[in-house]
Amino acid sequence: MTLCIRNLLLFFTLTLILTCSNNQELFLDYSNPQIQYSGRIDSSQIKGTYLYWSGTSIKLNFEGESISALLEDEKGDNYFNVLIDNDSLSIVRPDTIKRYHLLASGLSKGKHSIEIFKRTEWERGKTSFFGFQINGNAKLLPAAPPAKKKIEFYGNSITAGYAIEDFSGKDSPDSTYTNHYLSYAAITARHFDANSRCICKSGIGITVSWFPQIMPEIYDRLDPSDSSSNWDFSLYQPDVVVVNLLQNDSWIVNLPEFEEFKKRFGKEAPSDQFIINAYQQFVADIRAKYPNANIICSLGCMDAAKEGSKWIEYIKTAVSNLDDEKIQTHIMPYIEATAHPSIEDHEIMANSLIRFMEEHIGW
Image 1 (cartoon, rainbow, N blue to C red):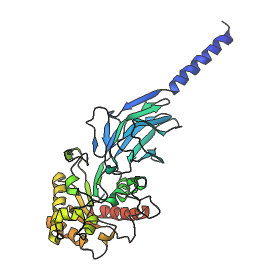
Image 2: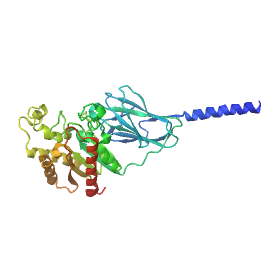
Image 3: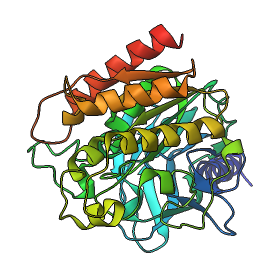
Image 4: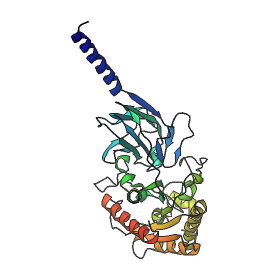
């Protein structure tokens, strides 16, 4: 064999090896310990993980040219933000059919991070996550150290980021426009580099909601749509809890013909003391779950937070009655509007909450 032919064969062999190396694939099962989950997730399933609540996220560090996620959605109405290297952002909408969704391609050599962040609320149905597929010289990298700070939010549509991207101001119920990532809650958590959990639902209240469930009935669930599904509070003990509720109560207590009013109150609106006691009991229940947390009883930024509102006084009275130095009141700015808070409104609320936490909690 001539030298020329041997060199040619060597060239093709090396090319084949490099090609195979570059096409190396890696599938990471949902249970891989390097996958980081945030939020109340159900990992008891045999083949995947169930995602329910707003702001639930999945993170991974890796090397590779492209990455996909194997997903299946209950209704096909959920949307997820996809963040690559904490920079570029795209959106994925899982199908009701289990399949791979390409999250990123054409990635450069070296370390990359990916985060899948649930924009939408639990009423849109659960999403099942089965794992990641990495292509192109794929390599799994160690997970980042867990966040040192932990925060949890209990709220309604404001906290959920409902219709935050409906720039027409018409408050469209289409889940396309809801984006918890841009909410004051998520902004606050990112500011402090904190792990965040969000227990929220548009239309929910403490004493009455626009639908049958109220927050005291669902706050302790893993699967919010299942009354028999219990969350283990020992799995996540936040340093700070923010409660932003009563906006919906403030409307419904004035609607005696509304079905949920009749079911909760009968024929007469609840007394001031009834509302104060209900709010106070809910905060006391939170304190029982989190004995060491700082609890911020907040309100804002819609009309219940308007200056002179009796709902502000209800919260202040309840907090005073609890007589706990680590339970404080913070009313966020009232922003006059004809629709749900905009992106700019959420930034104002976040700045207000951040300042309060820096001054009164020392974060």
